[in-house]
Length: 453
Ligand code: SAH
Ligand code: SF4
Ligand code: F3S
Image 1 (cartoon, rainbow, N blue to C red):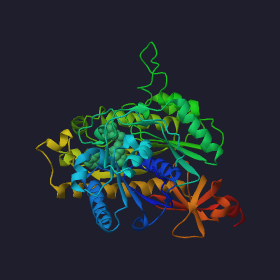
Image 2: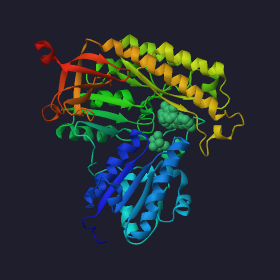
Image 3: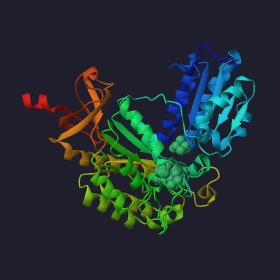
Image 4: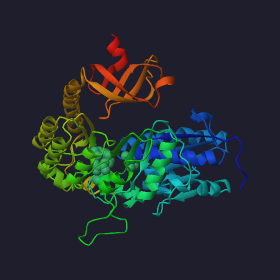
């Protein structure tokens, strides 16, 4: 194959952190192949859309982007068009029929194989790669967006069967990486100057179930808790985060580990989806709202100031006003620091999409608005506790809206701005006195400056 010379690539990423991490690895592969990044898609010779299909609007967005670039291909025939990620996996061959200009359609499990697949494309084939595969350990260096914080995949796929969700069918079955591979990646990040790692998985607390080495009592040798103990002392890494946790697998041992291990940050992202037991049952989530509350209580026993965030769906098929109220009650009772909310969207191939008891769009959007209103109110209340406190902030970037300020996060994941020069502060952790609070962000002054005032 002729090596492409001065070919430029652009990647647009939709969807969750899993997709963002995959995009960084695919960008790394393209750069090893000699491609150069270009910010403007219209200037690229290769465009890769890493797609999401969690809700219908996410999927439709992809088609409108694609249509534009497909047209451009008529005047620029050597443009390479790639669709990766979850829409690619869901639609497969159908996507080629819909957009014949496409060169490559590749599911998320194939991200690390991008070079092989592109070689086939450059040899003149149209390629569809959506068959389930064992995910290869990656030897390419990802091209990471940040030089301070990094994602590290821990477990791919999902073995749950929530009745509304496409993820198991587009991401495949659970595949845990070995503890050694995860630690090796983190050690390299520490050497490269990264300070924070977020361990990633759809249900990260289900980690290790597919690894060899079950103990005689049936439990697993490499649980997620074991993994935290195994990686927590990696030199250079100051903070460890993880997402997403499933209430079904979240246990006291994990909470204790988070309390014990100083690098593990005081933030827990544990989606509950609904505050009503009948809806939870129809969703096949495998827990009750009482169990969810017990988990949060336990977290607060061990880590009193922990920030709690979650995901929730409103307007699930058959959800009554009273059942929706149970979600509002749970949200008020827990006091979430942040909540990702969504109106239920019927997805192809999922059981709930077939049910007759779908709710009208107006009901769903009305409930979504009411929930969002409550969330903003509660988050603003939760933010109050930071006022006047000194928080440890890891500086990530300039504040895009005010270049005299830098942006970082508290250990509890609150976005925080304060005056400072990014050239001096990037990657540093420093005490900042919080002087202003908003629902989802804070403003402060570095402690030395605060003392002088
Ligand atoms: N594995 C995680 C979440 C993965 S998907 C978990 O189980 O909690 C991210 C979020 O998208 C979900 O938590 C859910 O709130 C939302 N979501 C998934 N399918 C959806 C659908 N069909 N309609 C609306 N929201 C959905
Ligand atoms: Fe989807 Fe449920 Fe798996 Fe989360 S646990 S990814 S919501 S099927
Ligand atoms: Fe979307 Fe796929 Fe993530 S559907 S939310 S990009 S797993």
